[in-house]
Length: 293
Ligand SMILES: Nc1ncnc2c1ncn2[C@@H]1O[C@H](COP(=O)(O)OP(=O)(O)OP(=O)(O)O)[C@@H](O)[C@H]1O
Image 1 (cartoon, rainbow, N blue to C red):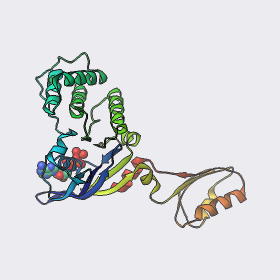
Image 2 (cartoon, rainbow, N blue to C red):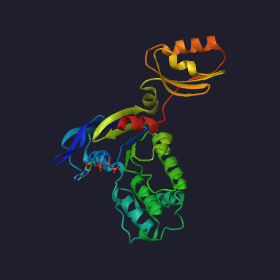
Image 3 (cartoon, rainbow, N blue to C red):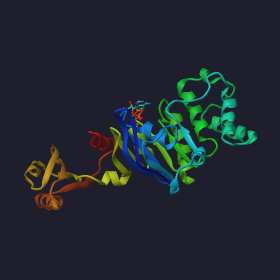
Image 4 (cartoon, helix red, strand yellow):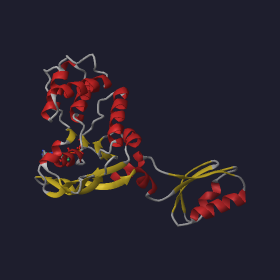
């Protein structure tokens, strides 16, 4: 497990990251979200040791992280760092060798990953000849070789088409299945919702929400949807509820007083047919909007 404890970083008078704490458990995918400038990249850079820390610490498997630990991590920085004028196969093999892989093994794995990301025919092309999305695919391959102990990925999905997103999702799922902790930042909330087991939300350098997707969706004031056989207008007069939406036979309510939902069902049943009464859990995008409002 990777633990981020009270991490703090200042740039002049700006506190870019302010006592941020969260965990990236083994075998789980943790999504890292927040508006532009919220502090995600700065946090990831501190985790990877490319930026100094003003306060707090990073723990890896229970001990302060070391340079050697970080060398076993796969890191995809925001600024992509490959050479434009070199063939992609050669430079990926070189990167993998720098990280300790043997030449033959590196070549085999690079070729396998290039095939997987649809670049099997482009191995001799210079990076700069590829479209931006394809360059991004090459960057991904560079960050996951050799098989890492943990993955820290800054916006790995940006610029990818849906097919490449699926290849990336499959790859990340394989890694998490093998027990690797994965932290990735993204602005694509639909993807985050589809992919991650846990979520950390930053706003203005502070952590404003964190937990498993289920925990976050269960937190907050419970909401229920009631669909009746007849008009639902009377729901407005029920005590202990805030009516968020009322449309003919359907009402969406928020419980203001504990137990008010039970009284609502009892009253609805007394009045006639109840077609539906369900708890409505917010989508991740809604949780995000509320946490960062
Ligand atoms: N090297 C730097 N010097 C000065 N300020 C910086 C530096 N790096 C980041 N900042 C500031 O720190 C804050 C957090 O920036 P950061 O890049 O971590 O945000 P982010 O959440 O990754 O944003 P984005 O989603 O736009 O990538 C911003 O106010 C940014 O301007």
